[in-house]
Length: 148
Image (tube, rainbow, N blue to C red):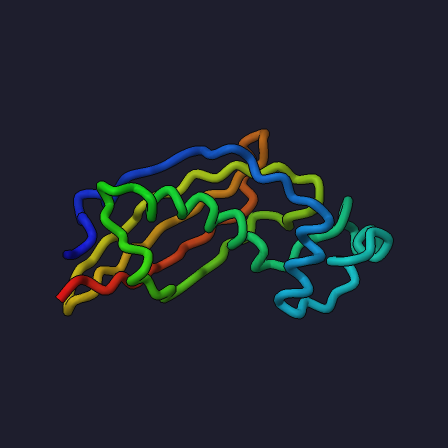
């Protein structure tokens, strides 16, 4: 069964803010082997001009995927997560993410295309600080295998 193309254009959120912590930044930096001391040491981050630890650029995916979960869980969209392969991820950063940030996310379903037994679902996560200032935009494409 293909993903419901009528879901294209839907939006979810903004969702409860994600609180960026030093511990989460350090854990993510370790997981992706990001070696800058600005991800681990407050003094090193300050020396580079940051107010606190700065997250690796791909850290935005942690926040975006929490919002993307709402798309996957919506039965009207029809994504069977057991048949999902992550196809693409793109980031546009408006400013660095630093420890202490609280970031709310709105997720948009920008495109759904079904062909050849696969539906692709492209989402756009808009990450904003609590003042409504843009932090990052994350474009994600999921490939969902349809039932035979």
